[in-house]
Length: 339
Ligand code: FA5
Image (cartoon, rainbow, N blue to C red):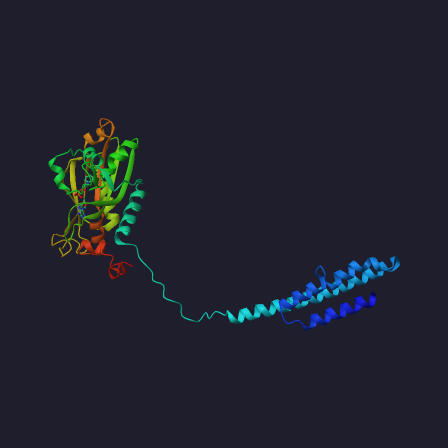
């Protein structure tokens, strides 16, 4: 038995020396230690060995097992290292090769204006809210003190979906929605898309507004004017001149329109401001007490002011854009200039 053991050991060690890959290594492992492997068979044959020789024979089997396992392990390491080196050679990355150019985009001018204006308003303590673009006649008009068949509806050529549902023509529609939900005092701004049947160089059927609403005790026109002055100067620069003109909106009393000195020519007159040196930017005013009452706010205790920026106009002024349609054409050459 001992001679047989030594013979098997030598044969297996010889096999291991000749191995050339991992597949062959596994075959030898099975040949030695598999269920019917040579070393496993020797262990099973212990019962045929005389009892006094069993400890010696058992020890010899263990020595042979360890020797074969060690040799297999060494070969295994050798093959794994060779495999790794081969992969490192084949998968080498040439870090000096020029990379593919990656195009960098830019914020759309309107998104940029929304970000700038909302940042300034948030600094001033406003919360940013949203409202639906498909709106009811009630919130867009009636709650804004513009009853059905009122002539002031003609100021906004509206896209009606049904008699009661429309595409909102002004972000002022969020005013009543927020007044119904909130308890004064509060300050909100709402940027968003608005729609009117309008189309020329400065008017588009889809455009963007930013609505602001402040409701508190002792609000006055002076608060509105000082807040808008700070806002305009932060947006267009400290030397910007601001002009307040009387106007009319059914939901504010008194109402104003606000112009800024043209940032392109600084008031001298150019093609952007059509020679006037000033540009009209927004409507605003002290909230009509009727509007507060319709939304359940006590107009004897609280007052408010509101303003509505035209964001397309703001983006056009900030970027010297001559035609509003450029903002909606998705022309990459135009957008690339905004980087
Ligand atoms: C309004 O829409 C009022 N809701 C603003 C307001 C809010 C007044 C709160 C008082 C209190 P107006 O129709 O003037 O007002 O529009 C406001 C701004 O939106 C305009 O100054 C203009 O910059 C922009 N605007 C109006 N129509 C268009 C259009 N078709 N295309 C691009 N911009 C437009």
